[in-house]
Amino acid sequence: MTAHGSSTITVHGIGLVARQEIRTRLRTGRWKALLTVWGVVVNGLAVLFRLALESSEGFDWGDEEAVIMFGGVLLAVLVLTLLVTPALSAQTINGDRERGTLATLQVTRLTAGEIALGKLAAAWGTGLVVLGLTLPSLLLPVLEGAIGVGRFVVVVLVAGLLVGIVCAISQGWSALLARSITSVLMSYMTVFGLLVITPIVFTLAVPLTSAPEDTGYGRYSKEHTEYVWWLLAPNPVVILADATPRLAEEKRHNLDYQRDDSDPLGDIGRSVRDVRAGSGGDEDSVGPVWPYGLGFNLMLAGGAVWVSVRRLRAPARTLPEGIRVA
View 1 (cartoon, helix red, strand yellow):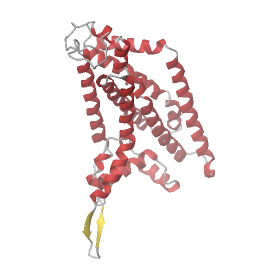
View 2 (view 1 turned 45 degrees about the vertical axis):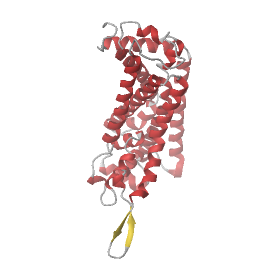
View 3 (view 1 turned 180 degrees about the horizontal axis):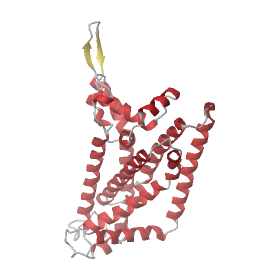
View 4 (view 1 turned 45 degrees about the horizontal axis):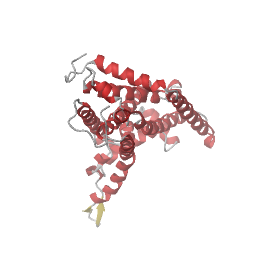
């Protein structure tokens, strides 16, 4: 352990805070019940989705249905998990301050960095458990051979990283705002902005890129999506879909002939790269989009962690009006 007030961060200190946070969560039975309900509901919906695919249009279950199931369930799981995630960390700091328990940690030899990272580790770990409970439904296409192990591992790692990013951002709001209800609201607004507002802003921005062009047969307006593709990059769905390894060309060719939506993840990834290429190119002429979006989100998460550490330093120079120290 380090002396109180030191800026040193140790794994031991982070572990102490994380274990205490997890014990506090498990002390109440509601978390166990909620996680059980979550796992049953999500996997149950995935089974219903599979049954619907099996019975639709008289298709026999095969690789094409398995790929559709994997992509559809994964996208739904990502969105649902990100909607649950703010509840895990949006009250970790201001909630403890409201209950008068935060000061107990701050007067120990734990540093602000250890407290912030320990709380984040506990929230992220809980988020990974939430994500992990959905894996049985995602493993079915892998066990059947329709989805490669490499593709499965990549999408799970990216999804887990996105969960950690949302945890960090939510904790940042918890540190910045005095009231826990406000930080929860802002955390959900952030997730909503990443998931919903980014495609809306992109759609509204595309017409603004129109420019007149002369083809020799007349003039017409041409939209240049290559100027505004970056507006889609931070979207978690775009990041996950574009980062997903593509199906083998032969398998993709066979699937495309049977269904238009044969590979939800691959279709979104190809569409986004076409947007980046614009009307003058195609997906093969540009690089991936996901590193830019993931990099932007990681910077947001890093800034949120920095805010959390700053707000946890003791002694505090100022406190929000109406907030007690202990």
